[in-house]
Length: 302
Ligand code: SF4
Image (cartoon, rainbow, N blue to C red; front, side):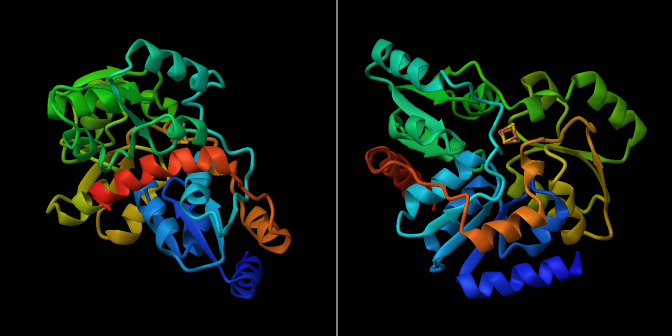
């Protein structure tokens, strides 16, 4: 593995590339990244970097975001089959229909939606800034919030906004049940529960803290507590253990693993740097319509 990492480092310099990795990626991928973060942090980084090539270690829609913001750069997705189970292929058509039904509504879409959905949106959001984005919209407006119903209900609780939520959710977070979390709390009675807002509402009721992955790491660092139950995707444990080696972290459920996020391997990263493939290209017409919704988000929360 050491040789492989050295080869990647060498190729990265030759290609004038940066590696961006989502915090749900496997530990060995996060370890070689120039920047790790949640989807919001990665979208900021993709927009700001001067590198000619971005190796995006995440899922397809995240790499599309980088391609939308930086069309002049080469965006590589080492694991081209890394999708997201939150969407089906019909989302674009279904959203079009919903917009026709509610022509005055403001469409807020999660940053990890297909480019075609971003192109139909007024503004994007991430789990880190969804509350701020919704608060930036006039109170009398109805909001179509796409696609995570759990994030939508969390934002609704925080803002009282008039939200129509899409009936999808992130299966990785929805897998955590109230019973399983209760059992973990009994097993670790001193631990605080740090949770992602994409968990089901009845499960959120058991959390001590709710926030994006970045804010979960910040809270673990800030808190004087020494034990934590982590209710988000397993990859975050790498960041938590690096940031707080003296503290103990327990994954709320061993089912909280996103198979798509684990498709990136060091071999695939190396191969993408050699071949400059697989490349993510968003058709220009879609990109031009999608970039506005991303830029609006970055202007409010960037
Ligand atoms: S963690 Fe959830 S939202 Fe993220 S890629 Fe996996 S299924 Fe999709």
